[in-house]
Length: 220
Ligand code: DX5
Ligand code: ZN
Image (cartoon, rainbow, N blue to C red; front, top):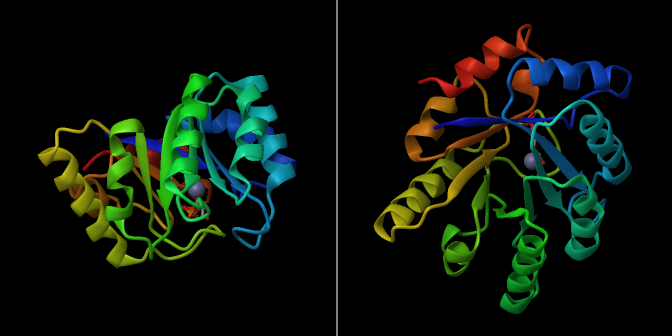
């Protein structure tokens, strides 16, 4: 089954609550919360995303899919635990060693939250293999993290295929999430490659009919 996680990164403050309500009505499967610290990526969305997560929690029971694009992973995990997200995904790149990665995985799980690990377009998928038995989700970035509205980097799709083959061969049950520049034109290729959670920001938020776009996004 393919699911859609709507990125609320580009949502304007003025219409945020109304828009969250509309996204719920349109049956998004998750709200994708893009947390940026101004260090791992240039932009800083720390306060805005806390505000949005709060707002969503007040009006919706839909799961939060938290994507941490931050260096200080521990602090940011702590700041999202109170929201009881369904998934917290952190990036592999800022982790200094294997020990650190394993500690974050354990800590997130102790709080009854699913764990995801994300990789940037230039990070090899093989670097994640040793963690696959312990996590719930891999997030393959299909653009450079940092901003919405970019064009998908086609070369990243082969990483999805490679990971899908690997998990099939090794009987690993894990979600493959893709994020960045995903739209109705390229979703089919991503789904065929093995992705089962599609993150989409601009292509949903800028569409006329959220419900129709989300439905089309899932169907091939
Ligand atoms: C990029 C973020 C993405 C992105 C999605 O750093 O992680 O979630 O904003 O937005 P679109 O779909 O507009 O690329
Ligand atoms: Zn994201």
